[in-house]
Length: 303
Image 1 (cartoon, rainbow, N blue to C red):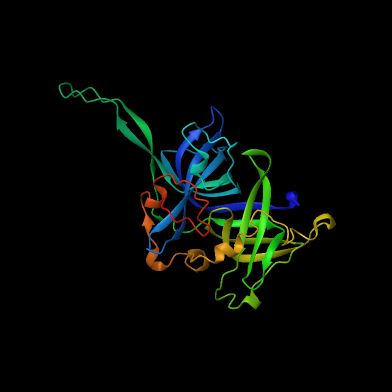
Image 2 (cartoon, rainbow, N blue to C red; image 1 turned 30 degrees about the vertical axis):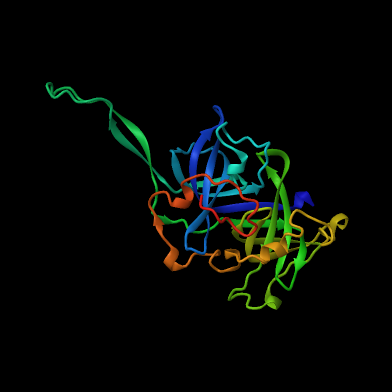
């Protein structure tokens, strides 16, 4: 079953604290991504540990912006963080970047390397080209978009919820890296009733896509699409039974009992009144955030 599961992320990220692994092409970043808007209307974000093999030799300044796609997994104390000043609890989960398209603009500006001698106008000032990163004016208020493939379990058709324990290879650790996900098919114009929602079946593989809506003991997504992918092999054709505790077991009802932004359309895309074009670093991407496993519904503290 492990080889038939996967978990990937895509979206726009603020890249902070770039650090290189020795003289290799491997880089680490603190990746800040938007998550939701809290009850007070304040934007919330999360910080992710990101690792990237810089084959294209992109230039990274103190901060940059990029559209990334990568494999994702939960954090582990065994991960290389790219430096001694960083701690595993600073991050919500890890991203092994597979593709990166920088959105920021790298300008090479001329800077003076000394003062001009006013007594001798024939002498010229020595200059050099310095790379300067300029951030774009774009809308960054969209959560990470996840693609999860695996065997559903803990199905609750009445609440349109189910869980998937995805595992796949990443550069962070040998073997497979886990990423447990709790999925919620929220009410929408597309699915106006529980009966119309595309609930996957236990024992049959499914691929689900949707926006990340919360982090905690399990990661939550608001499902935007479900693709049915056929039966599992006979050795695992029952999936993870509801009576057998998985990584998300008994977590579902606790999540649904909370008043959560994750159950609203607000998490899927910000309202027009909430959209801003950030020409600098927004407040939710400014600082590190420590992971809060006690908050089962969403990231409730600003970054």
